[in-house]
Image 1: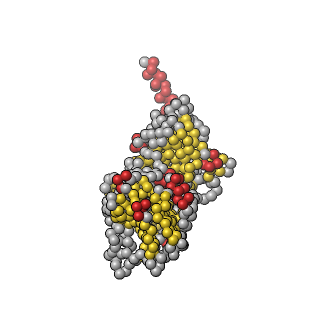
Image 2 (image 1 turned 135 degrees about the vertical axis):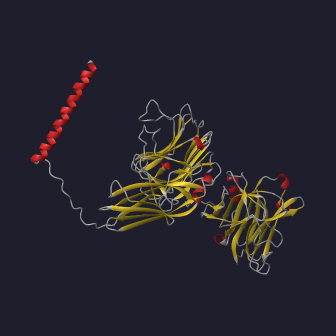
Image 3 (image 1 turned 30 degrees about the vertical axis):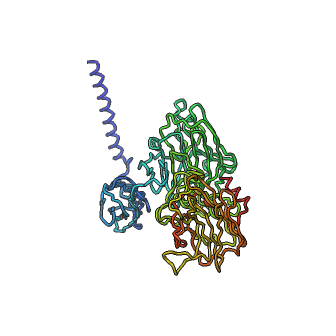
Amino acid sequence: MKIQKIKFISDMKVFRILMAGILLFFLGCKDGYIDDISRVDPGADEDAPEVTINYPLEGTEIQVYDEVTSITIDFEVIDDIEISSIQVSLDGTELTTMTEFRDYRKVFEEYVYESLTTGDHTLTVTATDSDGKTTTETVEFAKVPPYVKKYDGEVLYMPFEGDYFELVSVTPSTVIGDPGFIDEGKVGRAYAGAAGSYLTLPTESLDLEQEFTAVFWMKVNPDPNRAGILVIGPPDPDNPDAQNLRTNGFRFFREAAGTDQRFKLNVGNGGGENWFDGNEAADVDPTVDEWRHLAFTISADHATVYIDGEVVSEGDFPGVDWSNTDILSIMSGAPRFAGWNHLSDQSYMDELRIFNRTLSQSEIQSIIMEEGGAIDYVPEFGEIFYMPFEGDYVDMATGTAATEVGDPGFAGEGLRGDNAYAGATDSYLTFPSSTFENDEFSASFWYNLNADPDRAGILVIGPTDPENPDAQNLRTSGFRFFREAAGTNQRFKLNVGTGDGEQWFDGNTAADVDPGATGWVHMAFTISQTEATVYIDGEAVSTNTFDGIDWTDCDVMSIGSGAPRFTGWGHLADLSYIDELRIFDKALTAEEVTAIKDAQ
């Protein structure tokens, strides 16, 4: 009974307050305290609606494994007076027409289309206002086939082409804050950092073991003057609001060094941490408006940081410990590396790739060249061409790729690096020869002999032979370096065209290699205007004077075959391995040949 009495008194109190409020309202209206509601003229309808399509953007490429997928179309419409209708169409077919809106001047809408198929698509959003004025916006985008890993060991690839998907596992990133995109990335579009913004991904698909590599492009914004870039770290329960436990995973970040930005790598080894700080060598001038290539590798006992393909910091350490590292942060140290204020990076990032192995320097340089970059290429001894065959056929001096004929491949091993050219039947490479047609010429390469077939062309620059188009063998210009059987051995020979004739450089038995005892052998030959020499493992095996080389009607260099210009005697595709092919615009001395051989 006591409880009920209290409730009754409370109810009466509420009732009295309510009645007093109603009475005051009516008295106020009567006495003129509250004005009558009057209509406000909205004015003339002068402007057509503004339409913005937020997603997909122009050129967006959607890559998922499903043949048919859904897409969330994100758009906004603003009008000065009143929006009457909004029509959304895909490839000319109406998907929906909207006429009811909470706010008739500003509409922010998402429409989910469930049946997007592979191919090119055109999205159209048309808005009409109450005066009949119409605005139409259109974007072209595509659903493309699933991404196929481009490189061995690649476990993550993010091109940032209008979305934050990781394409190897087709996983969407978790988006924190409001990052964005720029249209002019290093390749296509790129990630644009923003304050308080970054991406995270689970580390499950990264196959975290003892080896790890990350490569990406970056255009540095020095504001803020320090930031995290890539972080895989453990939680720090003792400092939940400023985490900074560095005994596991890694932290790749930047911070001010005078007017420059310095890039550093910190790796946790389980019992402690190791620093890889290149000091001035790892500095980037942020006032220079250019894309820079960043990379770092972690192996079981060594870590290296690269800028534009060059080593800026490296050292031995006990190996990385991945305990309790479950997320990757992209373009921020948050949440696991925030204690020193390495937060969101407002720079641009593009073409992020992660590998579950340690890439070699030449592989990193090859990726740079493939993606339209340039390396700090420092030729020696007049070197004008360098092809390391680290998974591609790109000349590192010019960034130009050779033309593939047939189906050449890679050896999976090399004299240097992890790969080499592997010949195949009816297969070879060609490269424009105009750069090489100088008064002097030298070539150097490593060679692992396969004596089947028992004769083959190796390196040839020759003229066309119009009289023998199916068995060309005109030898009055250019050169032909090749091998052929000499008993159970293979003999290496050089033929050089002088314009009026030809000159042979045949070392007989001195130029023989036993295919049964072969491994990697260094080959070189030099041509001046008075002399030519053939070297095997740094030793001259054939040399002679002659009247100098003629380049008439030469236009291509063949690598790994005599074809197409030296086939009349059956010197076709070579199934051997070739590595570290270098060409020079001078005749190397014997000492220089030895120095090149010994350096590799």
